Length: 435
Image 1: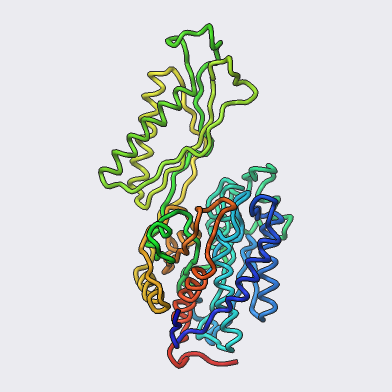
Image 2 (image 1 turned 90 degrees about the vertical axis):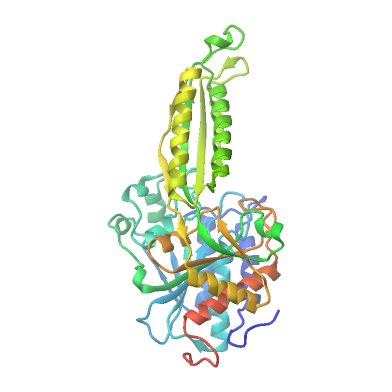
């Protein structure tokens, strides 16, 4: 793999050490657990902060405890070139989801430090907090907080495992929840030249295409019912004929099947979306093999890059639910609704990533992101934003994540090429100063 003569080689040996250390700090006996605002995420943040200090980089944390690691530029007032991702994981997840983007950014900055190159403008690696909403039922807590966008009532939400509030966790770790409640912002769009996030692909597309890297065109938004339920009536399984039943599980089964047909029809009409029922449960205290179930809880996750598609699918969900209520004598309760906005990636940055991939000898693949990422917050704030996917076997959010180091090395070189160009490092370093 040939390198452009205008690019400083990232410190890939450091990257491998960081991945190994993250695994040691996060392995729970089955997979990787870096719990949001818990010991696992904190250990990962401490590792990056300690590494940055050893490299002589600047460190700061905001009210939500997002970590900013900066190689100062010659012009400290110029908008900064930014990269990064999150360091938390889902319970029993993999080692690369999120962390790959932070480690890659660290490798780029370390390479520049070793080469004694100072960019024209600041280059910052951002390690965000709380990207995974598996812990708190709020999307993008860290990146929203960075822009002063976190809703004040989010501080009262409770973590799924401990039932302690976000405010309590922030207080424990030295965060400033009161500042978040008043909308204090650590970032403004005008202070950022661009944001480029490297991330493993969390699906099978790149593996199936035989491509190591993907240039992301856009990030799906979501519309979610996290705690919906269908209420029917409990009854004796043997003594209650079919026509006298209000069976919540049957109602859910019909509901799911009808929506599968709706999904297929919408795809045939050109809509791009996904529909997932991720959790389905009866009440273990009341349900029994000899009872007609009177209650079932479930979740719905709709994703699309088109807000109109999200709205249309939601209308169909509510319409089908009304039909099921009439035909099966049950009642739907939807609970709280959450979601995120779709985001479009910057055309010029997409092309820069594409060209840089070709420069390092890799043919990339253009693709949307079905999963959500912190990059969407930056894009929707008007910051020029791009994402680079790295091929990854076995999907994500599981211990079997398998990103190859050769693919990661190629991706990190691509990232370095784009960041260094944006930061004023070019052929012969005309806009760089040594230190």
